[in-house]
Image (cartoon, rainbow, N blue to C red; front, side, top):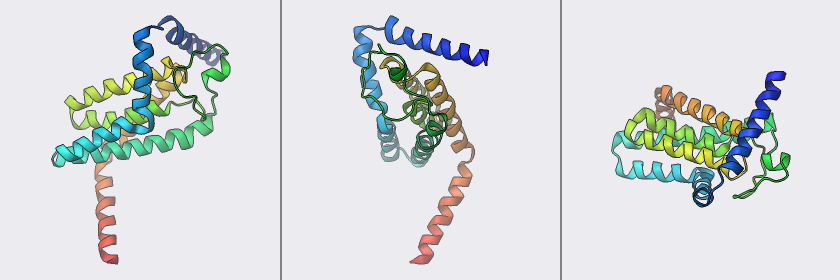
Length: 193
């Protein structure tokens, strides 16, 4: 219990460091932009679309798997874990939080933006190191932005990194299972016609 209390204290201190001590005009401009970029998986939908249109078979496959990972990330984060953990947002605990984004209505843990960024970014990294490194850097920046704009604790973002990365890894690990499900689905649809 003492460790958990210490962890929450450190989480709050780090949150205050990021939102107050690191406060500067450049971050005030770029962090809300990064937060909006990660909203609803918008940037990842764009990346997947670009891969599907410009890429050949491997690019299209990576785009498909990234979208599967994004959807699974959203489901397990927003529909399962947030409700189970029910952690209030930092601005509900700290009265003097400077907020640079819309106030989310859902619970705080884990960060949905971070989860739905790391899930597809991990898939892209496992499929193509070149694109994947850039995707992981962008995912990390989106995650950090959620702390800076005042809507997540650092542990919320860390939880999103772990959850998203795990989901991305599992999607690629069980890629053949997804292939078989799709092939069977196509056969069933063809048979019904």
